[in-house]
Length: 400
Image (cartoon, rainbow, N blue to C red; front, side, top):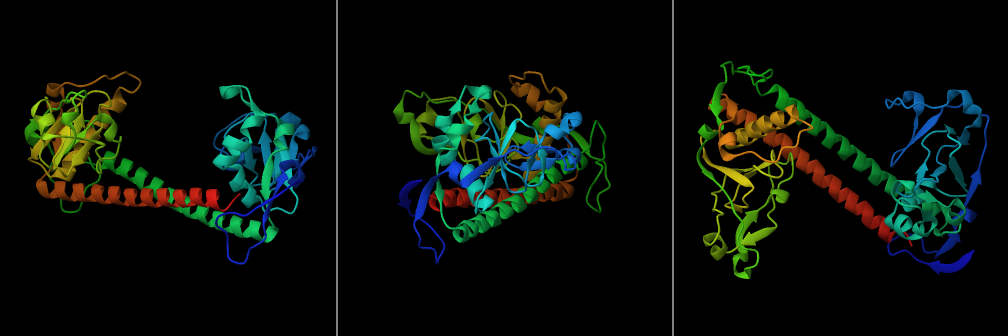
């Protein structure tokens, strides 16, 4: 046993004992029990633990005639695959049997949640385990004997449990917000299909109460009074850059995120005057026409762009409705030619596209509906990111 003693940076009140470093093989015992065909066969899912194979929708084949050779794994014990994937360790969520290719480890007087968090940490995977992983890429394997010599933190069971409880609560909150985010994302996707007319139809499948009139066909060019192109000031001239005029490029626009663009670069007035880029008024729509075609965003502030964009300005239709209608149109066309390499679209081709448009009052309701969904999606996304950051910080500061 390594007798070095350490103390974590952050810990719960009432715990003052110093921590120890012990070999993994001293804390966890490997076992290999077979002939348990009465138990369910389990599959191991990276980052999710175990799933009963017969209840999975993955429909993966396994050798049912050789179940007597499968190994027993008990709930909350650890499973190690010699083929390394993100550390190669998972915690069993069920008692069952697994392929003989796996190794099973049982902790002596441990809280498995405490060690699962540690085994999934960047420190363990990138620092502790790395010297015991050999091979390259998909052929990487773990030296199980070497892994058992790794020095890992050890504290009393009560503190392990306190940390395990806390991390579990964080994980539950992360799961809740992830589900809400996914549910809203899927709702938005479904409603984009149902609230816009399909395949030349003049009526959507779902619409707000009180609206019955047919939608009209309009060219994209009819939706805006003015269009703007873009350009790139000479990157070799420092005078053109680091000013206060936002300049966006394709990588600034996230696919499916129609609001909240954060320009990473800014140009000066000299850069604007000495390039093809143009200053686009606020409340315009920036559409990518080259690399990343199909991405677009509503811009609530004046901006400039690279040559990869065409911007629609002084809109004749309700702005939020227009950005969703354009997105729906471009995504539908991209999905229709999925698998085909699309290098770009010309200005004339883009402006000639047909957009279905209802009366203005209906545009307002549709735009507000989808904007509200996007706001909720952003809210849960931010909560998710914050919770994940809290968990990351805890894993760094609550372990030694």
